[in-house]
Amino acid sequence: MRSSFLLLLGGVLLLGTVYCTSTRPQERVENSPFVTTDVDRFWAAYPAALRDTAHADRIFQEQYFTPGSPGLQAYFTHKYKGDARRFARNILRRPRYYASAQETMLSAADQKPQIRAALRRLQQLYPPVRFNPIYFLVGGFAGSTAQPAGLLLQVEGNNGPGVDTSELSLVQRNRSSPVTLLPSWVTHEMIHNTQQPMDGTLLSGVIREGMADFVAELVTGKNPNARLHVYGNAHERELWQAFRPVMFGNNPQHWLVNSHEETPEKPCDLGYYVGYKICQAYYDKAPDKKQAVAEMLTTKDFKAFLAQSGYEAKMSTP
Image (cartoon, rainbow, N blue to C red; front, top):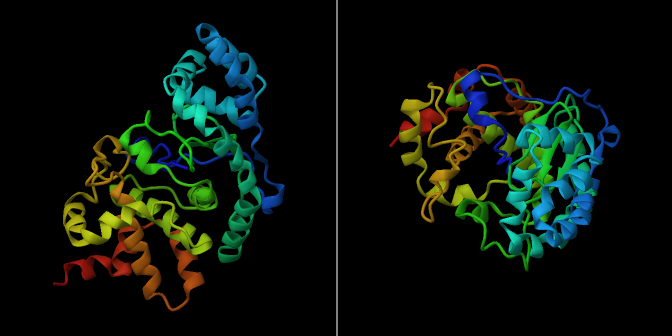
């Protein structure tokens, strides 16, 4: 999932706060709601919307949103301001995609055991973690978000064989990932609800995103943003030299929430890669690896965290 992440980051950086769920988190992952019925509900409504496109908004309103879960209703309010016409337009403008993606979207529910197993491993690594409700839904490519209802995760973008992505943008196609990567994506997003808030700087946003990738990879063995590392590893020093002069500012431009800058040669969101490398350097230096993870997730001084990682010094050494 692209929450990519991904989750309200531009506003978060500028405000210096982080949006987290306020529904009481659960100590045991089994006690935290995990809802996938909204995906089934969408696919029950979709054929009727295709038969009557002039009234598709009303159909989605009556058959999808109104009877939907608290998570779906929160998503509808937050992403679409309660306007089903906008949602219907987003769906109907991609007929080949949705016609070919039903099986893949529905198969997201099959990942529930693997996702819960990943979250249990996260808790073994960091026992204080608590779990917010998780809602899978069809979002019309409006993106995933964290709201008081829980983690609201759209299933678009988890594409497999046979899914026609020709109607998607370059970045949407490039971000597409197999459904089997969902445990890593969900772990990434749950980590955001465990970390300390950003301090308003680009550095803090980059470290938090890279940290979520790094710890998710420790837990699942898979990096949800592995695609960024192909370019990043080939241009690591160059990226650091470009990032260093702007890291204490509050503008995410060129590093986060910059999907419009995706090109065939260079991916967007390379701040995730820089943050990952800082966290990797911190972890590699630490004698106690479990303690290193706890220190990552509780850090509030991101400037000190960078210094302690040794990454800046490493990148300054010829």
